[in-house]
Image (cartoon, rainbow, N blue to C red; front, side, top):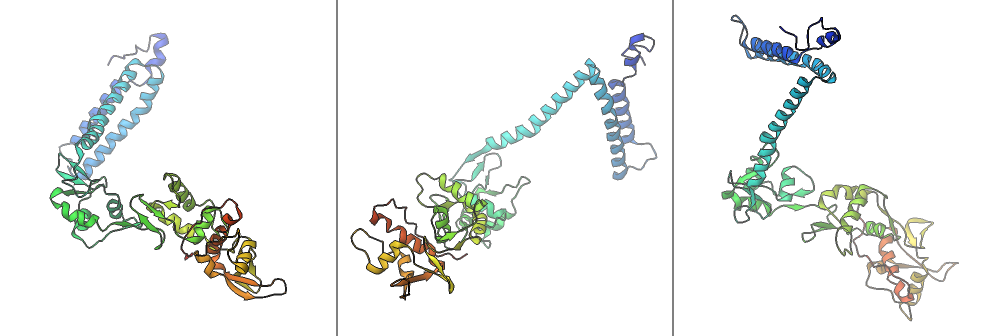
Length: 361
């Protein structure tokens, strides 16, 4: 066979003739493939033998790769052209068999609320099936613990059996009423039973007093700082225009629940824990004492309707003060909100009074 790089006796071309030649190497490899896969007359044609032959063929091809790379490094035009052809073939395969199928699939999907179970679901015009894109139903089918649906309905059983290899769920549009009945039972779960989900915002409302006090920067409660739960709440709240409360997405309920586990009530601003009873706080706040002694008068106007006022009780006189008042430390955030309502009477800048529910974590 004639050497394409020239004979060995051509002086300076002698080293180049030692380079592996792709045409001869691949040709012999392909011939070996054909012979191995075809087998001899007496060979067993079992699947195991065929796989063994195929493995040997792949090994032979891999053995050709280092030689091919050295030829490219040597500047072989022939090998460079072959590489470009291989890249072009790979691109064509990806484009026609993967990207094209994906684009055609997306092109076939159209909104069809009159046919499908919800406005979010998409209709495939080629298969005449509806794809589940209802967020809460989809994530329930994916076994997420932050959403709950009724599992005993026929619609759930239909969708469970309709998953494709990409994890999508499909149903015949004729079953839309059945699927819609299943959708109607789906509702996201918030971090606590007291937090409420608002469908208009697609968010859960924070209601825990201690957490609200911590998020507002007030006294009366503390929580772990810089947690994923805190970030989830602040991010969701910032994304809502004009939000005056604190919100979080339902899918972050687990993070918020872990944040709540770190929260605990403290005494309100300026108040101290009773030495003989660490579970109660003594009123030391000057406005709190003045209100308890004289009530609302002149420029002191506290909001008596707030729950924090009801938690403060009289404990009698002591050697240091004419009257002493206390409250359970667990209601420190509520008392703090009561104190905040008094600031306006003194002409001070008042924070918004945050109403919430007692801490239960």
